[in-house]
Image (cartoon, rainbow, N blue to C red; front, side, top):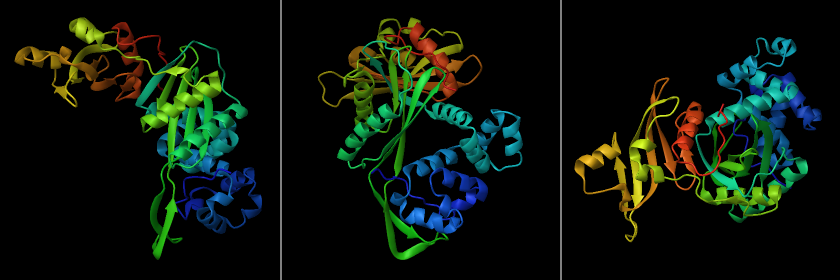
Length: 373
């Protein structure tokens, strides 16, 4: 049986929501008999989390994500009708988020999904072998994904815990993946948050990664902390969704050949962009172990032309930074790294940057132009 990986670190957390709404949430998870003593129940959850449903921890995590002012405004703006507007009137943000989770799940999922996508600035993309129609997987497939990923996490001392929350949004299939990280040890706290001497608690922090699949292009986008985890997602998603471990290829999606062949043409602005300059670059020199050259300038090509003696062709170009001046104002850097890494500074830049990369030949194969939010 999987157990939750994130401890309840707020001993007074039950006071964050109204008792009526919290009781409804607990009732939904089979804890109706214990709602008469919320302080006692919360102490038990904090002390013995494995005795309680994992789905309860998932729900609390998701509600907390939308309990800030931003989540409150987005839920109110997207309210599902006059009834919700009436129910939510005058409620604090945390209660609005919990009410939406309980009574307006579609709205809750949509707002949470859009916020998660907007917050994703760094990812890697992998191309599938071929285009194949696919809908959002059902519970049985999700369970197999969780089981296969759990085995791989356990091998790396991250526990077998794995929970996947799938949802469809804007034509893409999204998967929020909750799993454990290596154990940590911290001081034990009493009900008032004071440190108990002597005393300590061992717990396993939770990590949330995200994967998105575009059925129109066959691309899998993955956001995770390390390459071993990213490789596990590619392998398991390929195996369980398409029947092949190597379905998602790590073949190059980005190419820097346009910068080397025609620098002026490669940096020519496209719609929505006023100016593009190469502001940083790294090359790995062939035949020199560990030899890397990094260029940083307001205009790398101009600096190379002025000083001479070196060229981007002196080695293998591995990543570049593009200083982009946008038509609507603002200058921000987009970093591109081989084979398939793109880092944005603002999620609203994504459709503009994607158009630029495709029209100037930086991308190999079809890619999605879906808005990030």
